[in-house]
Length: 315
Image (cartoon, rainbow, N blue to C red; front, side, top):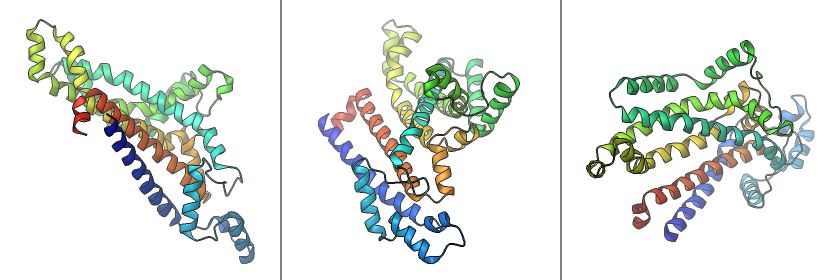
């Protein structure tokens, strides 16, 4: 198991190194000079040059890359060009919105998908299976931003159960803040729940046809007991894969939803920083999201080894 762990840690470190290089190169080729953007079109060249020197933009790109990476290793993400505040402070303020939102949406997705997928698999070919698959197809087809606007129209404007946007803040109370995240979490969770339901159903159907399931039934277990005791655990590897990918997507892919609901999270921060050519913020936040994706993938790999001991032996 230790050898398996060390191999995955090495892969994680290499992935982060390559990702940091790609993120830096891609963002640096974005048109527009931050100093020129901040000073406006009529700025004098010497003023622009002075600001570039102050921001460290006059250094070579390799030097700036090394400085950026070593700073991140120390927990220093640099200083925002636009707001002149540490990027780490900006990220930490918004992380307390984006991370709970992603976790909330993931929990909703699992709560919906697991029972629906198990129910559909246990009634393969029946009316229940057809109904569940129909709803999952609808959930995949509906864009989450369009569904988000429908939620706002119905629950915020018509019924007035929720606010149309904004975030109350955790200092107002846990349930008040959670209520502010409910509609965005539902909008994010719907397509993910649909995908996870289909994967759960498909994985369970594959397992239900295995010989060990027939043996379990022959030993006297009911269909439900065999499904819950034996089939479910053996069907979890593809499901864990999707859950890991979904959590990564929910953290990194909530830019549109956060803008629909005016949530001051990481998604809006990236959107605003791109518009303002605040490259250091964009680089740092994107790298943080890449780190989250890689770490979640690493955790999923460990979960594989826990669910299926054969993976540990192969490593």
